[in-house]
Image (cartoon, rainbow, N blue to C red):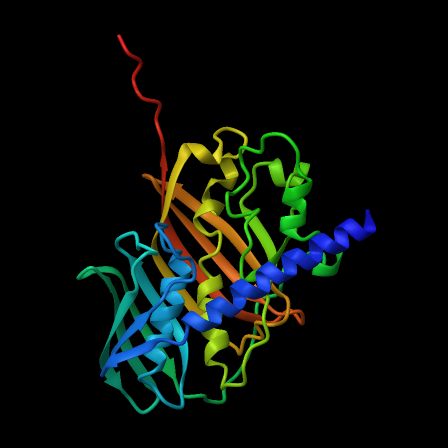
Length: 306
């Protein structure tokens, strides 16, 4: 059994590494002309684009027009589903270059139509007072099971299990509420998960790490809004999609180390749900904050035939 688990861990690690390297590759955008860039997709074929990929590439495009400053806030709107079979064009609008802050607007385009728009602000590093909300008291990642291993261990139908839970991703994830456990199956409002990027990062000024954080900030947010209803309606009864996304980065982000991604939902109404999240490092410092509203539409059974 020990040898089998070792082989499984090795296989999962190799798959994650390949996807992580692929993600780093697609964050190297092709410059078409001034303030216009083209990005390839991490998944090829007739698939729906992951919003986090578009978000991270749009941020990377904005970074190409800024020097000596780092992103501190991002506000984006997902307008249409992207197609993974087509590249994405990123058009950057240089809104303002101030003494301390720089503002950019980015539009992601496929087939001549906008699929995503984003406003992003960069800030020149300054000294100031500091404080940070405390990290939740959760077990460290070393005491938790890898999510993909947990999915492989589960037997029988798991109607509340995300389709993404068993797929290879560029991040290793370990859920505080172990997948398939009684605590995981219970109705709840929060979902803390440890995450770690699966590939070494090339030397840079921290730009790539912040783009990767933007990618991760869209992982599993909308699905968090259905957690309080897990005992009543299974997740396959919901249509879910990201609508708008806000990200604030407070401190440098060590993406190659374990980070706690603590997600919780505050409200849902009118087929929309609101989720908040925070990223913490191992020392307990708050690195980034996220808020997203998503479409959470319950699917109705079709009327019976007469």
